[in-house]
Length: 292
Image (cartoon, rainbow, N blue to C red; front, side):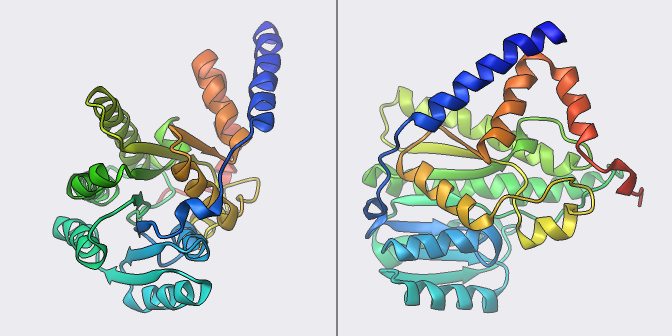
């Protein structure tokens, strides 16, 4: 293990140095006038993405379950300078909603430049209880509706040379205890969209796919669900939202946020998976997780 760390630490240092000194050419004007769908936008990261896009002068269509919260988001988007702001409410358990949202974007704007897939279904942070039906429901919301929206949006995105942003998680790259159903859906996103990206490249289709690998973010839902187990506070949702938008505008393959907290474990995974498993368990207050 000592030899491994002697090799790994300098390598990680070089990677971080490269990323720190690499210059990005993002400019807010890149989003001015762009037509963007943001799902799961009534709270948390999705809400903050809508506000950032509004400040940049984009057209925004937000979706989530709760109409009242969406109306508040739309009002603020218009106050912040959005070119236009609209909403559609409903549950993504209904595959028809996924298609209807895309149809609404076409009706409103005649096209689409960016599809940001961010919504998730409710799940627990606990030992897996054997509920297969819960996994099926989560797969419909967290995965199949993403696929359905992508299929519906691709014709417009091909026309505009647009972008698809898929909000995922470290739990979609690494096995993390107590989130087995959620993790399954995020691994599915990685497999599908990474494969689709390759096919688009082979066909010379100018649509980028950015997979956003997020660590612990201080959203209302996350704090309520996992704060009793996490030893460190989550990263700010406002900054996270901005980094997602920037990564899409720059057409990056993957985003890691917070960078070190996500990227270093992924590097360790490939070199010392058992060590990473142990490290992951030790970073959680396991004693605070009670079997239901």
